[in-house]
Length: 318
Image (tube, rainbow, N blue to C red; front, side, top):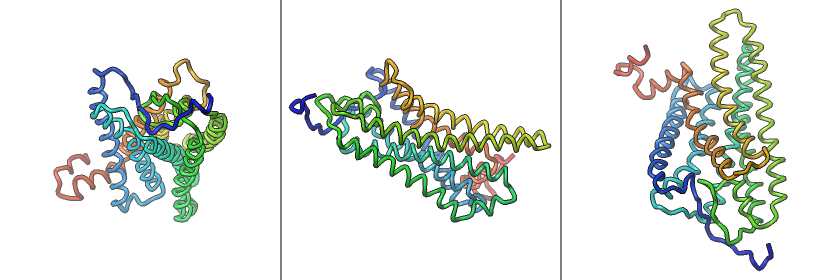
């Protein structure tokens, strides 16, 4: 497009998940419920881990960070969508859009790295149980906790600085429910070849490294579990790994499908479905899959909600 036809826009229009007026009320109720479940569930996990000294271990430290990332991830997109539905306004300022995109990248990438860190932690715990406390010392745990946050901010900053160089023309309607990177690149009227190259190279590295760690870790875990003599122990371990891998494949499958497969005939809907899964659905499921199936976590939640003694909730421990 010629330079004379380029304009500097001050806002975008978020078209949302549906353009049908009759569906807006249903979407508002549904996503409000999903948001509340996600925030309350993950906040309870963080509080239980922080207040219960029995859970001050590396595994639960990583889980608390995952819950914080999940709360933050869904909070970058859903509240603005709910506000737009309630006010019947689709606008978001240019600055708010870029900020929303930055933090959405930060928290999704943090989730990504934390899933890899948690898999490595389980690998050490199951395959090297006698050396676990020595290997997973305080210094390594702090490093494994801080690194995902630092790397995710570096990735988000890289994409944001490159996007700030792009020019957006008269068309500023974004067919999405939040400011995601891929739809913004398609909306730009300037050359985005460098952006797309960086998205592929950096994105591939961000996805493949933790995913490879997860696959290797669970392969070693499976081999170790198969050597157990107790059938009940094998079944419990496989059941737990199966639940974890369900979320892993959901998370990574949607990211790979959205960003790395060739464009479909309707890339806008593909982006919305993929982003919905890994920014809304997965954070909502994580408290159930990672915590409510865990006896220690259920005990900590029970103590947090009901008190240690003399509560009517004691019957829940049966």
